[in-house]
Image 1 (cartoon, rainbow, N blue to C red):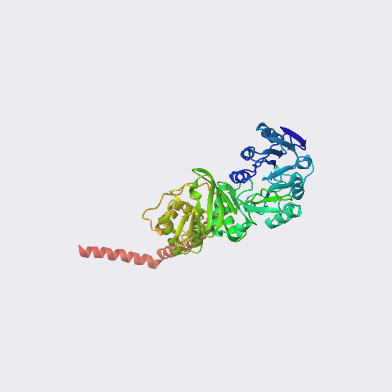
Image 2: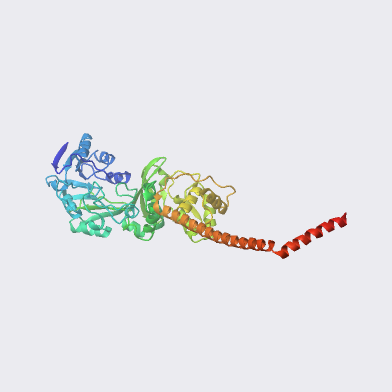
Length: 495
């Protein structure tokens, strides 16, 4: 059933992907049964289907084609703009995992972020819960995008972004603003790698006091998978890992998930776990929760393969350690790391190995092994613009052989295959700079040889002139005639 509330967009369909994914689905599975839920904004169909059993679901969308599609799936739909939403309907839970940026249309008033939150608050019953995702305009996903997202560029958004918007720019400010609006926050978490489809969730306390090295590796793996074969300004894996390790994981996360309640607080709370991650492997999607304890941090699988169950490995990401050693031309450290890696986990990519002292552990056991793990790191070392001890090596196959020799392998492993890594413009610029340096060196050598050639040509010309001058003089002709007579006399004497 569709109810037109005003401001609907008859011929428009949302362009950007809706909010969805297994992590969001796992969180929504925690909603108590027989709950009235308002899903505000575009959300993935699989997410709506996961809510419908046992819950009374109503969707608010501005696009009429999207509303018709949802209605055909048996969902009650309110089609129109957020300012037209009346207070007659009250809900136990409001789900706005897509944020509030796509709740208004050009057919009505344009609410800013604070006004949109107030409008959603008016639809909550006393004790109701608001699940709200807030995008971070200074998140890692914005820092690596080639283009600048503004209201002038995005075709499906009519509100200003970044420095022109009104959304809170830090997680602590988000909690403060919601609290000031009468929606005290009981749960807050940073989201990686993308707001619309997260794969890693971690609370600010976890990012502050948890295992930073392992969390940095998980964040790097999440953004690496999200940006496969995509064009980016710089490597998002390095920025994400550095942000988490330097204590800025919450501030530079692509988005934040806030769980807020309208007073009085509900009898059934909606807690957020300290950490939540999803991985995709040969066995399908796995969802696991992160929790700390006296004996360290553990992963507990709640859906999917049990390979992730158990302690979270400690240590630093092997790929980062190898790059650090290469940048410092630390050959002993490189040999030690390469030898230990090839001895312990020769078929595991360097971006999936944690190193703790002399121990090498797999970060994500559900990831398939690769036969060209060493070759993949060789390609990263060459194409990433990283300084290394072998500047004369410019081919991935040759670099693989050099690394294999440093690791003590008798035979070089197979050459690297295309991996679908992010297409990084910084790497292209580094490669162009390297080609420019080589071209400048070749040009300088060419100028040197040209100058030497001109000097030799001048010397040769002078020698020819002297020869010609001497060959035409009277003394030269007399000496030449005497030489001929002497040779004849010598031949007669011998005969």
